Image (cartoon, rainbow, N blue to C red; front, side):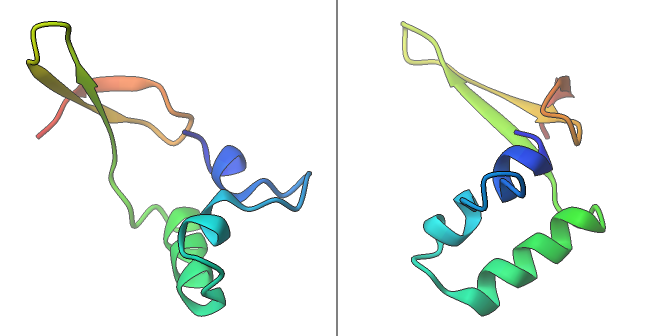
Length: 68
């Protein structure tokens, strides 16, 4: 997930704001953390057999390795 997708500046439809149930202070803290690279992005993938793989993502949402 890229910052643009999370914040949705162009559409003014912030996924972060929705995820925190409209808590403006928390949404702003998360937005600032995203913009200053103070977050770690991870993607968890569950295979058909139930095994879970977790990957680190870069700021554009691309896989850059396994996590942790």
